[in-house]
Image 1 (tube, helix red, strand yellow):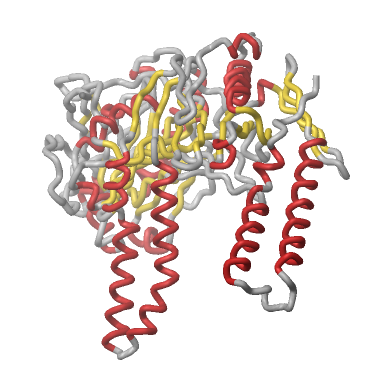
Image 2: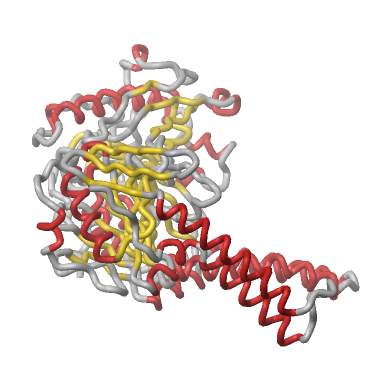
Length: 562
């Protein structure tokens, strides 16, 4: 049976017009003016009232001709009064279902339901439903998307979330972020201090040049931008919570005036980005973002929504390790040995060449770098879409190349920079081989000996000790040679000999080859576990020509999470 959204939908969608009209009328009334056009106040009030009535009429018409139905197989939404549109979304095509509660909608107990069905399509929206109805439909659609047979009535009997947070008694709270840390992370952010530094330079130059008033006027755009940045950061990340839903997925809820609940199905997570600005090294905080397949990227005049990819706004090292275990279940990051680039790369990357690291295991590939802002990227080998090898003119002169691992559009960009050309070819071909094998084995537990080990890969250490379950992988210790600002105590990384190129690289693609595509199935779940323990690498003839090279870094075990 077709039903309409909540009757208060026209008021929620057109409230800004009404508020602007009331403000303009009372402003002119208090000032005693007639608008400067010779019109009396009652005429201005009548015009404002007419505009508000037209806006309400248009909103009511849109609401009246918007109907939807959720049957046993699909969601159907019909909109339009001059041009009718009917959109159908089958349950098996649903990627995620989110609940958005803007300020005015929250005040009257309404919420918007947003259904994602693919990265190339715009989201299907139901504006607006009662808060309880939106929660029930969200839980019902998520269960039907994974093949569970249930009904909306049965879902409605489950505990419902509250008004201030989207967390019911059936959800498991994994992580919450207190406001003090959100504020502290902003005060130590690079964006803040860049704004302060630019403002100070403008004022200083203006006063020295005798144009102090001009310099102060030039600060107005910076002041507006700074205020917008502060309000956006605090409003978006306030009341941050990460939850485990009864269906096994993750849910991120956050917002001060606008509460957004975003569903993160585990099989849609394609990659992870880890970031640590310079000043965050004082308290030891990290930020974690993810790539997720199936999110629409279309934007239009009404699409001012924000899609958050952050699962850890500012967390400690233990919280970092905990979040990595949640978003990458079954993957042992300590099994990856990170290799450094040859010394000759300093000729083109003289600032941060000592921070460039790369490595892979049969489950995952990792790359990180950064002097002032430390960045790391993690991509499970069952999730990448293509592998590319690029080589510029300077790289060709030095005999190095970069390997790009492509995923869905998002914050994760994994690039193994400036590898020796032979190792780059071997690295790319091995990633393709491991990725194809990882997709075939699916959920089966496969021993590490089932994967062919390339020559740049290392052999298990004699000790064979497994890594600690709470370790944060390569990010358990600071980069060697990178600036340190009162970092917390951390064990030093183990070292071994440099890597060696593969003798079988002739069959691999050339350094200038285009991308070698390897599509990732959208229904993939978690990767098979990889072997644990440190690894050592054999000497590299090509690297030996440059003299002693940086040893690969092996992440040591970390203390368990508190």
